[in-house]
Image 1 (cartoon, rainbow, N blue to C red):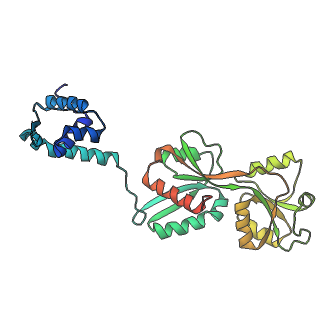
Image 2 (tube, rainbow, N blue to C red; image 1 turned 120 degrees about the horizontal axis):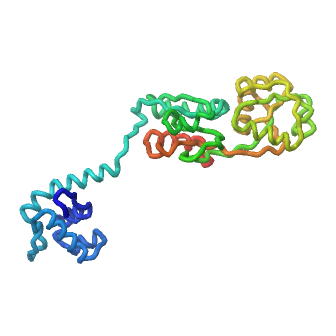
Length: 301
């Protein structure tokens, strides 16, 4: 062993335990090693420190003055290593002053953000939330730390991105509760005959368009909207109908007293997940935010 080489961690653990127990047998049991192995390790430590360290006596292995002098520094090193292994930047939501940027669709602004904001204000009054779009820049933003989470249906995100399921989505249609031509059930014939409001944005919009193409259905679109803002009021005040994912559909229906109908077209469902980059998987603040989201919106809630 070279003079400038550091001792193995196992030798420091041996020194610490032997100083306490005064017994090679008990040290072997605690370290899960044989007594011959412990004797070999002790020989290496003695060679390294140029001192016998422990002398066999009727009362056990008695430490030498050199061992008495070194036990303090040895235990400081071991404690430092324990702190190093358990290290993380603490995140206390009650006192944290931080901004979290979450990429989400405008549907999530209506369905998820109000509840999330209410809980954040209650648990972490110094935390600020910022909602950003889900777009082609989302993956880079998660990797760089510009964004903390992406919540939604984002199937194109690549490697290095963790994901966690929140809930499954199917499709519904909304109509005025007093619609003259739609009663308890919306059939495919009525679906084709009515005027529609089409939502052109959103990560699930392509699934709806693909389903309509497969079924060879061309809606009578009266109004196109880039998002869900104002949609509930429009359906409530007209005889138009709209097709959209269940979560946003039921939220708008409750807020605007609308009727919710099963979608008569077979549209592929999708799963809403939260996504984050591997770089921030163990970061304490990101973990807190993720735990809040799964607590509020996970299937087991």
